[in-house]
Image: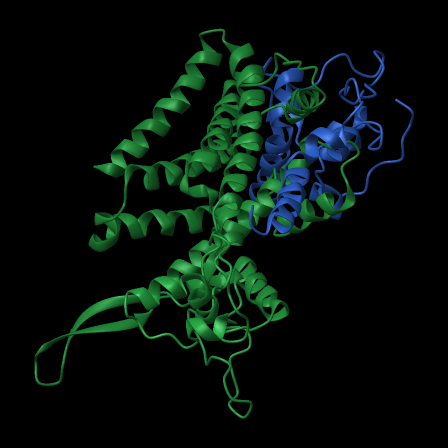
Length: 130
Length: 339
């Protein structure tokens, strides 16, 4: 080998960087999805759409709502699931039930390293302990 | 035609993953077996390739004179273009690896006309390739680092900062990453130049297009998941975390489009050590970049030369004096003197 020590050192550093996901979690057995604090039954029994739909699309819904309300003045959302009418509002609809940002929104956003800009304008309501 | 081969293979691979997971029920294969195999091939293949390169002899200094060579003390020389010591060579390497300095010197040949109407070849600086390469490579690096949010808990602050900075324009929700656009812009030009310029099209092989289409496929499948289809990202994190903890779990909520993305990444990893993409490791072993131009300062000995002891003429004559005298050859020391 020629310049073996230098090449080997570089190779080891590279492989250490590449295998970061593995050694970073070395020894851990399992990663559990964050547990969300859902509103109690007497406050609400269902969300505007199904759980799966909300998990995947809530950011799209909020983005659409923002555009509809602010730019077009429309405030009524008709649910895809049961055609019920809801007011398009983060604070008055979503957070009426999911009132604790830290125990609901932030749980997944933190683990997914997402920082939504909702809170640049909106102020999260004080948690009522729902 | 070569472009179609590359495009066809990538489409077939994407379709294989889609059919395999979506309808074929081969989730175990595409979600568990293939990712582990791909990472193993990448790590072992990369290491073996570099070790193989390390075993080949280092050539004689190749003084690619991008600048004035060091000669007399009063002639200023190009320190980083034509370095004579390791320190300056390291600077040259850093500039090469981080800023693609060689590519910055890229020229293009243009057939023009002299003032009196005769055809003449002219060479012009061509920076678009460099720009596309820089955009592509740095975006790719940032995208890979950003993806570490799926493999860490808690997500380290630098990765959170990167995520925040990358989506700082606050367009759309989920927020648009700037690197996604720059990545596609870079890739787009790298592909377009192969298709548009006849000279480059002529020297482009299927492998050149395959690598491009594969990475474009990875980018588009990722963009599709984030901005169009939307996937359950926390379930995906559960899957990726279980994968790196060696106890794979595949939540049912994950959409097939994710597995297309994952499979294309696996293909890229497994293909990497055998392809031109190995310039990732190879750039560090470029003999024209990593060797100082000191062939007039240090004696270079060929490392594979056999060891030959010096044999002076006097010693030679001592060995063969009698035979030389017998053959009538003149000798310095006579036979009598020796005795």
